[in-house]
Length: 273
Length: 307
Ligand SMILES: Cc1cc2nc3c(=O)[nH]c(=O)nc-3n(C[C@H](O)[C@H](O)[C@H](O)COP(=O)(O)O)c2cc1C
Image (cartoon, rainbow over all chains, first blue to last red):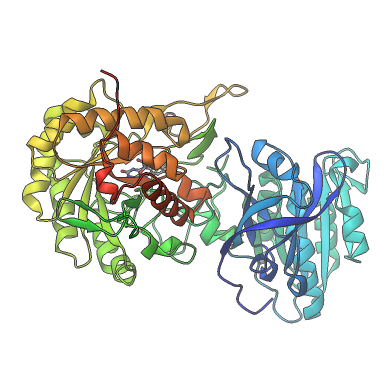
């Protein structure tokens, strides 16, 4: 987790494994030596090699890597035509994969506890992050929330990895009923010290976690998910409003190269759609 | 038989091959240099530059449409001085032609940006952006009034000894009027074209999909429109035309050469296929070889159009 990630490579590479998780969810594993060296929170831009009339690649968080076999895995929800095209890939099909891209999560300091808050498909990077935290011997816990049980498709995978997990659903069909921030608050009142918060998921959820972090004066990183065009910082389509110290006003900064992970204190939430 | 030649000349600008990366789709070149070998391109056209840094439009700024991309970025950029001082030294390390996309809110600003760019070592030509649809002042206003086009091109001509290449807007009734205005004002070549004004609506919210409202349409969706305008402009003037619009393959690029373009730019496809240049270049070589044409220059304007 401490070594600097490789610079991005653009390659046509095969889908070596596809595992359906029911509904619009799947785990896809590709062979791409570069992305297999990604750090947690980084992403890849992916499109099928036979893409048809869809032009842009879509960004996907790296859920897991295996540098020894040059493989990486994404956790995908088919939401629009671009992600659906990737979802529809079959084993052996080729995809264009550019990565690893972006700035990932900052590791906690030695002895510092990490609370990871994942909503919906935003939980993906926390699988890879958990592995690094465990290797570093950091105490951590993952809070995974969704609208209902069917929207927590990664539970089995996370349990198999033995990740300490608290589940919650808005409708109470799995885990605690209510927002993911409720069990987070409970846990914060129990643990000593100042845990570091990490959030990835729907914007209202990340914003709520960011507010908790500012009230409790905890360090917090959020992984933003705006519409992205290129992943290289050239189209400037994915800008987010970032307020830096000493700057008179917030600036539009590309999430693909300056993020997607940002210190929550720098994020100006109002303007995001 | 020796390999066909891809070298072209745009005024005094010599390009190793006729493939350029279009403004706004390759940053300032340095951002893509770790993914694309810039020496495989004839050159790059920078993101549009004003005197001052600009923060651009609110997000969302891009929306994908069938075979196209609608954008309203609003010319976010570092400003010409920061480009010259901080970016150009890094860009100069790469063996590729650098064309600066010059913007302004007034004729004077265009001339001033042009003068600063021309004085900087390592800038090879100026493209004058009189066609951005996504800013409230300047931009497209200069490219949709022939007198304003003439004035701004004339002012930049006076301010610079580099090749001056106005970039035309397709959002006009008769592009030949604007091509001639550029030629008369002393342009060395013409870039043809910028994006088409468009509007995409989210029917659930009934709001535009872009925060700015309207945007500029690019990508393969506009190619036949851009080829037609390239053909019209090429017949109207003697200066070279640089064809732009929806190029995604060698065959797409060939359409522009045959229609009358002396060079082409690839825009939107840089986002999803940053390494497209090698593929286009080898496709051009194959085509020229197969048709026993010694140089890409001999293909320019050879359309067999029924009279
Ligand atoms: C995201 C985006 C940003 C652009 N920015 C500029 C710009 O700064 N200056 C300019 O002259 N043209 C700009 N353009 C227009 C392109 O250079 C090009 O003329 C247009 O996209 C058509 O070519 P294409 O279909 O290959 O993309 C931009 C286009 C896109 C898609």
